[in-house]
Image 1: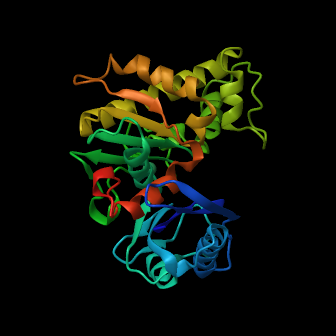
Image 2: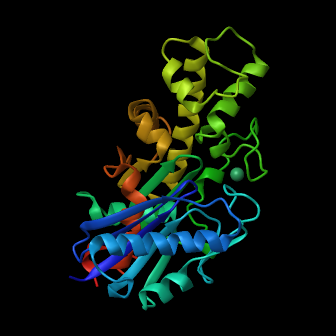
Length: 323
Ligand SMILES: [Zn+2]
């Protein structure tokens, strides 16, 4: 069997899979992402996850022909490293990935992508519907997109194409983004920022609400749970849907996709409440063709599948480019 490896490096978990030449996953290993002491500890954990997945597949790491990695950013693609990740402790400054994985498998066929790009590569390879023009949008602890245009996965300068979470969707700049700028999409709609946004709205207009606002436990899940029953929660969700629709409309006008696959915990946990309002609002916002807005079929696996698909297709996700 020709063996290929895919790795999803996330802020909480690392997952490595081994697949055959058709892209079927034959073994997998999941472990927690170390929170220190340094970036090398994360590198070691990635290598160990690949070794364990190889063990489970009953092969040696050197039997792996090619590997793909989907990771949080920011990254230096030329160096094959993640640099100063925002969602891990400050002591983790640099995580070497491409070089150490090349050494482990004894092959230079190792590709590194940010997680949203891995997502669109996964959709392109595994979806029943995989046109040349498509987008994978993740709404999770951040908002980001992987984009395929004319059959090419867009990368851009330093791999920063598709950083749509930092599109300005609110010119009033009511919320400040984690990046320091005002009015960015993910400052309103990411899983982390939804409760912050609700709290800020409530401070402006402290109406009666059943939401546990101003408590430690207050989370995005509360908004989705209380919406429909609690007037303020419904208002917050309506605003979030409004910003999501503006963001998706901007994506549609920028890239003209036939389909937008949506993933990430916020969408996966609340598919109807997130996707249906986007579908309903696009008609009033978009002057060109309206794409299908679909939930990813691959759930949490889309990034690791994309990493595996990248290994199989030389980083393109194009099933006809299988190597
Ligand atoms: Zn931003």
